[in-house]
Length: 246
Ligand SMILES: NC(=O)c1ccc[n+]([C@@H]2O[C@H](COP(=O)([O-])OP(=O)(O)OC[C@H]3O[C@@H](n4cnc5c(N)ncnc54)[C@H](O)[C@@H]3O)[C@@H](O)[C@H]2O)c1
Image (cartoon, rainbow, N blue to C red; front, side, top):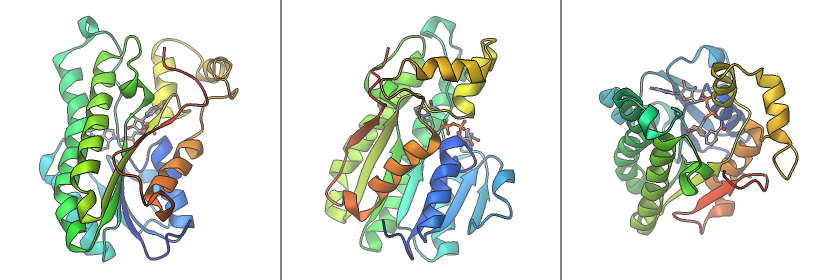
């Protein structure tokens, strides 16, 4: 896949899946602006621009596309990858769980897309890849707020895919099932399980035989961001190793 000279903004760039996406974009020749709360792991790497900040801060979030455009000289690709997972049924969830999850998983990509789409349209088009989840398309147990927010970003993706295709802007979403990242591992730790053992056991429930690696998801994100997906708009691409939700 050809990304030479392309410019990309990636949120959640210092997380499990985010790091794999950034690495692939850099390896393929793109210029990358990396956004995350902290970017410690990426300092001194080949990333072209570090944009540390909190996606709950609307001024920061709304400004990300312009900041990337100004520094990189273009804005071809946006990967809205940052996310949080609060677990539990509605009766076990707080207002803070709700507000944080909506802010990061829905409002931030909404604000970034709203700011980026006119900039991309002016330049003849662009690509957005949002991060939903299989759990947003097929709700699973005990993650009510997470599923709701991932359903919301899936729906926004379908709407934006339809509304902005005429501007040459393709908006699609990747929908992973379980992926071996800090998000999954901290969940096991919080419940008192050894993450290594838990990941191995979870892998046995996946028809392909293992829990997805960040690279398994990043490769699909790269496909959606590439010209190989040039006719895809508003698609929700499930990446699940054959495992249904539930
Ligand atoms: N790991 C999984 O099993 C899984 C499954 C389906 C979907 N996803 C989605 O994939 C995406 C990446 O998740 P991951 O598994 O790599 O998790 P991760 O926790 O490793 O990475 C998430 C990143 O988002 C960043 N982030 C969170 N809140 C932020 C804020 N307020 N401001 C700025 N950045 C913030 C974090 O700092 C972190 O680097 C998420 O949207 C997640 O919901 C993950």
